[in-house]
Length: 420
Image 1: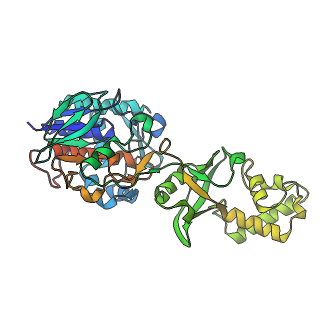
Image 2 (image 1 turned 45 degrees about the vertical axis):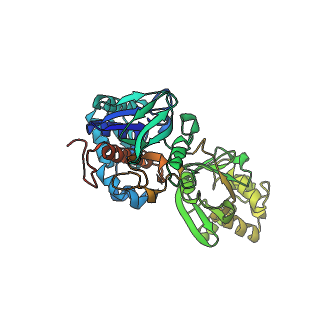
């Protein structure tokens, strides 16, 4: 019987342990925390957006890095496969806006509990509060692992330790260090799906949320990103779904090379907005500009934009000059923001960066450098947008790594379905 050690008991590790054990291997899963799936408990604000019910082609369009690498993997174990596995094990699911899939109970713990039960019933042994400190090697490759408590011999080891995001859950880079010691290259790790710090002081408008605005990022004269969505002003800068997606696209670009512009009224072109403003000023000619702006922007945002335009909030509408109107229209359509940095790993939903994909076989997820070493989940240089895509990457890579590590013969692209 083949012996497999899975290092890490998160989403990808639980899936790898389940699949390797189901494949007939003797599996030991080693988790450094006191419980499994610690990061799963906080995903989706505790509700666990576990996947996205879309076709592989659509899924891959939402992958920021590693799309080609994931192409075969996501077809071997798709979002629909994941949903079927959970439903077959009694977990009811629901699909919400944007095809986001959650447990019907809205409890992330139910997902962890279901995966743990699947792994245990398949025969996997689970050891908690134990940390792997090094790989044991022979001339052939991996021969075992050493922990802070014991040594385990094995024929294959699956590294599923996660990245650096939410270090309080145990994602402190242990697996990245183990990968380096094994001879692998680790690309620079940066936060992704996180808020953005601004040079401008926006504390006066923190808490204001905007819908259907366009945020555009430029590097020099080249547009890096232009998206419509929801944005939230915070004490440090901006956040919200629109900003989280942007962070995934710009996190490897020096901030000093970027400029941001916010279009508060994307449904109106400049001429239409100019006419709208003229009508408002005419209809409310004896009112203060602060009052007029409340018809255009929520909360105190109008006052903030007036300040940036150099127009006094106490000015009467009929006293605003043509030049001032032009400046105001220009700001409403192209409001400049200066990014100075991303929020840290403590708040980042995922890590961008990890084990270099060129050193990993995309069909089996086995190392090209060390026989018997497999990778899955966030430890790999793979990441995607929000919406359940990152967790599905963890599940799909965990499934393939577990299947490959536990197989008597490498599957080399063979499609093994959990329900076959």
